Image (tube, rainbow, N blue to C red; front, side):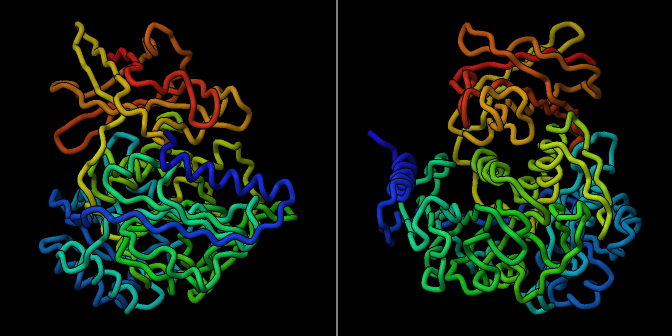
Length: 512
């Protein structure tokens, strides 16, 4: 039997084959959408403290939006800061030590440099390298747009706005398809675990097919994903920013993996003929991000620089097995960048027009691009309880002065979670990523520090698997301590390896 997800892949593959052999093709193929499952139970994580921050401009101009946030979070702290000087924000974070921070910022104030500086700031509140404050941003093309965004968020957590239990994945343009081809089919081969909670629908189309007549193709979904290449004003050969405001959408959470689709104003082009950075600005009327935020989105996760397709799927899988808040989702992404870089935050340049384009390795490109992902929305928002098993069962045993940890693979269906999107030196196929085990283990009482982590063995059954310890860090989170470890293994093909079998194990030895 062929799964629904594989059927979608076969449909797209057959379409490409038809075009490849020169067959004339003009196809518009709709399949009735699967029934939505139960609506999502949206609520706020009540763990605190909670801090509301605003740039000085946003504090003056976003009065209605900020008032709505304060109504939603009574007792939250409040402070303003200058976006070009984060000392004020740092002092407020140190004073309040929030679990969550909601940051009001005007579109022209949010760019790549700010996103990187903010990420660095929120890792510096304690002595571990990981993210300390789960952050969401509120902005809008106008103050009224920002207020309307906050009103939708309040409506969702208050039960007045309903998110349907349907997931629509717009893969973006299919370059092998006829220019006018438009396919909509049940299932999803990239993230099949969502089927446990959502009806699934996948969309793929030719490079001229996302016309205004397709604006209703994403309706009825409470969770939406956009893929493809992108620019601040569009998904290349797909949905344009000017169309994003006119999409027929239900209230929804949107994940976008296309480059630059979180840009609200200033952005930087790296690939220029003269080898120097070009500073550019997208108009508010054309910005994909600002137009989507004035539509029905109650949260939006996207990047303000070139992004990469797998981390966005990792975010959705983390949501599926953790039931965590959206702030935890974006923290998970940024913590993954830190582990993928060897257990430390990458060094970020301060981009400026005319400076020589930085000489980045492929890993730098992917790490720093993913570090530019941001959450627009309330970071305390929980959109669904966990509905699939976590990737690993963690077994611990203290052995004298050391701790033995065994991570046993329990859910190999988390296809993206098991992919290292930053490193590729162990792949047996050129230009494909390594596979990985990203292990999170709560440390026993009394373990206030970690001196060394060793990989004892990685096994699938009796067979030992080659491995590399990529990075690790011990996290202080409230009164608890946890250890995060990334171990890479060779991939045999795209999302395929000897490790991806239920029961495969990673053995660790941890010393203080």
